Image (tube, rainbow over all chains, first blue to last red; front, side, top):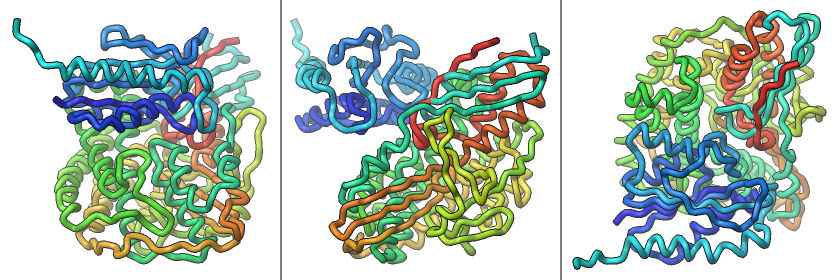
Length: 156
Length: 431
């Protein structure tokens, strides 16, 4: 099973580093069949990372107003908001990358996005306490997604 | 509506440029008073951030300034710090760096040509619409970009923010055998690149000739990428260490990125400057493609920059193939760079133009001061001047088409505002 875990963000933009931090943590679990990628969200890199995957899990920071930093939203392909204000410094966001991949026939079989509400995307390393505190929950949530895929299908 | 004497155009959240910024154009009594490219993120963060860090760290830290051109930052930093320490890397290390840099040019230019710039010429709002009608074309662009990424991954360790670079060279150099499949991929990519030049050459280009001074690195016998002396289109040339004497930065109220001028003149760096100053050093294949596309020895029309980028992709692939063919695996993969107190200067040609770094290093190996002059910051006054002239010449247009024209003209420069300051935003306000 080919699974892509993709952390989107910039570790030098404080809370924008949550995607990369989560992806690194998943990478350290060393699960077979899981390819971990860290990217700034540039769409062709996303396409490269998830093309051919049975499941792609993307973890990205989002700016919300009002914000509850650290709150995690799980979304699938059908409920991605167009042009939601991702904290990435690039003009095409994940929804646009999904649209482009769809047109080109390069979508993964399944796509799950964990969008983490963030507070501080100014320059600097280290995340705010609220966002850093959400990291274990995000890793758990991603692990559960991976476990579902790994679980053997039982004939009844 | 279209002939008001006074109006204000605000282009917030510029689309399809890297980063965030905005353009404000003020028209009074039928004359364009100002065109301000506003960039409003905390500037110069990285320079402050580098102070007090070890002299070995900028090679990794500055890679994070830009996800599109990390190698440019890494190699300008390496050259500057090695200059301060009195080290010149051996030719095989320098060649491997040039190969890596070719990968970045291919990837960055392919992205800009196909996903950001071509839709402007073909009447599409974005690359998604272009891909809907021309899936094969966009797929070709992505294949080209992938070839650049393949170089970055093999030589740099990964496609973005390469991790295999260090001061003095690389952690590990690839073997000849590892480079063989890459060469095969690049041979196919060369065909795609030549087809790209032929394709973009058929676009319609508005007439516009710029008279800005042009600045690019230059080398006598090859197209300057990773090294060279700064040279201007008027023929002046100076050492990289004299860059701060010629290119002077100043603050402007409307932008958090510094503006700069070259010997008191507005200047432009990037593909047009490189091509105009260095076209004689293109490889025969790239030269032939440029000739077939109707590019003469110089190009001062910013709308044609898409053709120049396409020719530079051909050159970068051709050059990568030449470097792989003559590959001499560096042994060791890096040289020691013992610390030496002093100031060092380094410049390379980022895809968007000349990128200069200066570091002042203490005897303790800590950085006392850092100065980074990115291409987009240098180009800002020239971009603003172009906007003024463009709006003046098209005042009869309604706001919406005029705004579209401005956006399109800004995209000619492939501005990387995330490099020059970070983030850009776009809205229209009428008055």
